[in-house]
Amino acid sequence: MKDYVSRFRKKIKTIRLEKIGSSKEFVDEALQKEFIENLDLKNPSKCILEMRERLWSAYLSKEKETIYPCIREAFLSQNKPEFLKTVETQIKNILKTCDNDSKTAYEIMIQATAIISAEAYQEIYEVSKSFTQARRSRAGQEFQNIIEILMRLYGFDYDNQAKIGKGRFNDILGLKMVDGIFPGIDSFNFSKQNCCILTLKTSLRERWQEVVDEKQRCNIPSIYLLTLDSSLTDGMLNQMHEHNILLVTLKTVKNRFQSISHIHSYEEFFLEILPERQKWWKKFDSS
Image (cartoon, rainbow, N blue to C red; front, side, top):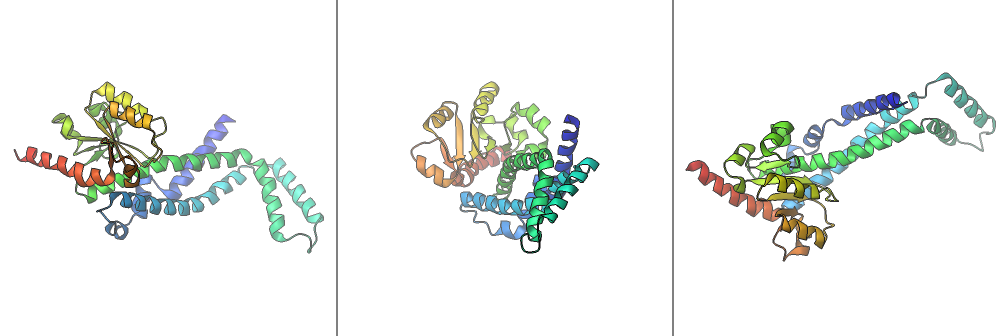
């Protein structure tokens, strides 16, 4: 049974990848040149939300196209003689008990689908679970792609795991939780304090505390935690401050915490912090 479920999961994942593509391919297709050119770069928070909304809408459309072959695969998995005989018998019984006035073709189809679904419940559950997990995974990957796009639009050098390779990225920085670094991984050895080390989390939950543990282990001066989460607590913010974790969030969230210096809006991050760091690196490169 385990082998069968494992094979079915791989089949669903293959179908999903064929229909939707990798996260990078999907983002490139959804956020085309004309859309990107119309972003208001004076408002990074707005840019992020607009790209997220565009991607979500495009993903739902792709997901709808993908669910059909996956459910069909679940039904085909029940193509066994004993099952087909059972379904045939039950459908014949349905047809016997109805006439033209009492049952529509649609109602008969619903009953037949329900019969097959009841037999294929394990496979349908696996399809549902696969799609749910894919949504969560892609949310994080697409957020990383959005930040990479903004870095490019603002003209900042930036290395991330996709560009460098996760293994080399971790070997050089010694940080598993890091998603990107400004201006680049080679600059890290020259001046850690003038690099911006980024970790990205759409939702903070409990996992952000892993950033605290890793930062302490690797002895880096600070780390920028970019998020879309609005459910911030005083305890969470105090702990971040103690460990010099600089939170970057949407402007609407930052406005709730105006007096807290270690919380930055995306406007501050892209329009003030990174330009100042970039000036330092330009002086360093020209010296």
